Image (cartoon, rainbow, N blue to C red):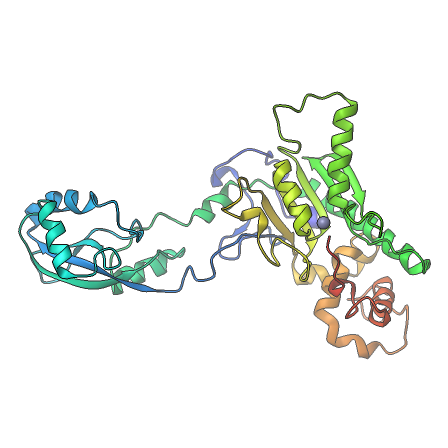
Length: 392
Ligand SMILES: [Zn+2]
């Protein structure tokens, strides 16, 4: 079912122009093919208007270049004004209004007059302060609105639209890799249900280069070995293979060009290990609200203070796909679906009463229902696999 929505002929790992990239992209939501949600640390205030005072003067249009050269030579202004135009043409006036500097930089009129004189700015009038937006928004319509209502802004396009355009996704092997870790996770979960003393966590990671899988590990942590998270084990596995093959890694990072597929949003330790290894992309199935360090907090993959970054995507799929297709219970995607079914349908649990193993509603496969109920009665947390939190 999922394989019908993409164009498998699109090659991977190349920067492409949108015209060659047939992916269906929702730019506003950062959603590709309605299935992969882009995780980035967008400043939530980016589209909220905040005005700051700046000094302006009015000049004769013939003096504009001289005046502009003067004010643009001021480099000490601590306020970034690169998003605003320096000149404004006001309706009904035969002069141009030129932005001189922020009021944070020079707080008094005397200081501004003194600076303009030292810059040899030609005759000017009407020195005063006006308010301009302190940053540019990432929506073109909003940029135009702020320009109309306050001061002309420079629109350079939404940088992230370009990033999305350049994203190349091959749904075939993404689907295949996710299915693999999902099945393994479900297997572990089933074992845990059967054997009461089995404490294994159903967290699974796979590292691949395109379709080629180079490592796959499940979580092996224990009280005496608390660091063997599945991502760390995968990295270890690749390191050992390279040592065995005597591969010379002195000139490259361990995972440059590799993608990571994991069942749960990773913890801080694993996210940082992936920064150090220089992976290309990470795709996870379930958000870890309490312990995840990507979408849930920190956005470690997209932190400007760290020396590298990687792409992160969360598999979301459409709600119809998650809950309405009965056949999914048999195709190994249960673990992808289960938490989402549970999250969406939490309020419906009581309706099931004691009809265990029942497929009375096609939205819930019997297997899911059983796990659903056991999770509800376990002491793992609030119940429901999707709500149980581990640091992954
Ligand atoms: Zn971890």
